[in-house]
Length: 175
Image (cartoon, rainbow, N blue to C red):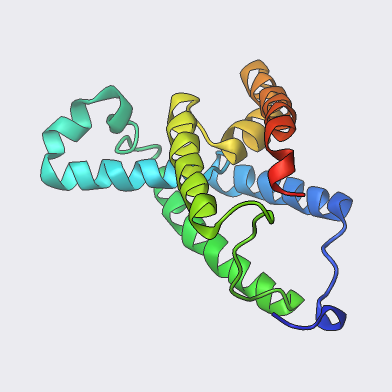
């Protein structure tokens, strides 16, 4: 990690929001659908099952949507480019801003092991919840919210309410 003087400030959140909105608009224009990271993982699982048992994958309601052609092309394949793009973009953003480094963010009362266990458990829960909700926060919140989906707006309000409620119980761990 570089000294504080060489670390660039974060992007203004209003500018970042506008850029994210323009990216979402471009995604709708180019692919005809929004974006969401959990869709990429679902596509990978569907493809793996299709390799093992094509007939099974194509006849299952949940999996078959990943093999239906829309005008001659499978439009969900582009999602597989999304996740590596996020990782590569995050890496270059860290290099550009001077924030690239090895660190484990945690409060002073939390051990490294506790932090890793909690992060892993949280990742499993959010992955399960994303499939249960039929989309992750980017898919439900950004895409569904921009389409004025009532369920997505309820999802967003629930995230904020849940975050505030959980913060009350864990705040002393981070002070």
